Image (cartoon, rainbow, N blue to C red):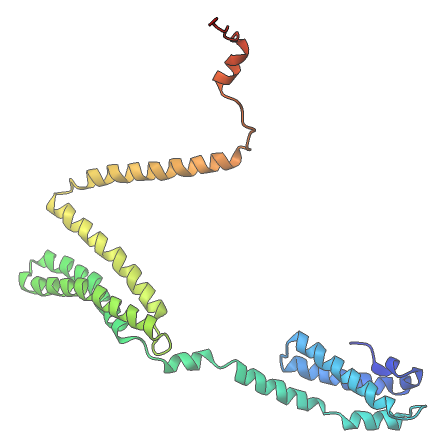
Length: 256
C-alpha cells in the first residue's frame, strides 16, 4: 500500500489515517478483482491520495474523525471503479470465439481441402480394388484421383487470393496451410510410386544416388560452418614468398 496522504497535510491528519487506508485498500481490492492493469491501478490510488490531501487541506486544523469521514464520503465508492474497469474490459476484449464463429470459411479453400482429401482416399480405394480385379470401379476412382489432383491447386489459388484481398470477410488461414502441406506431400509421393511402377523400381537407384550426394553436400557445408565457428580467428600472416625475400640478396644495378 502506498503512503497515506495524511503526511502531505501535517501530522494532525494521522487522526483519520486508518480510515483513509481502509478506503484505499478497498479500492485496490476492487481494482484487482476487476483485473485492472497494475500501472493504471497505481495511478488511480495515487490520484485518490492527492485528492484526499487536497480536500483535507481545505479544512481547518486540527482534523477530527468526522472531518476525515466526511472527506471519504465525498469520494467515489469503491464499486464505482469496479464498474468502470469491468465495462472497459468487456468492451476492449471482445470474444474471439464468438467473432470467429460468425466469420465463414473461404468457400474456395473448402473446395480445395475436400478435393485434396479425395487424393489419398482414391489411392486407398485403388489398392483395394486392385486386389479384387474390379476394373470398372477402379476407373471411376482413377477419375476422382485426377479430379482431385487438378482441382486442388486451382481452388487453393483462388481461395488464397481471396483471403489476401478480403482478410476480414473469410477465415481459413489454418485450413490453407494444412491443405498446402497435404497436397505438396501427397502428389510427389504418388508420382514417385507411378514412376517406380513404370520402371519396375529401377528409378530408385538414381534417386538414391542423388539423395546421397545431396545429403553429403548439406552435411559437409554444416560441418564446415560449425568448424569455422569453433576455431577462433587467427591473425593474418604473410605469404611464403614474402618470407623468402629476407634470404634473397638485393639485385645489383647494372651499369649504364
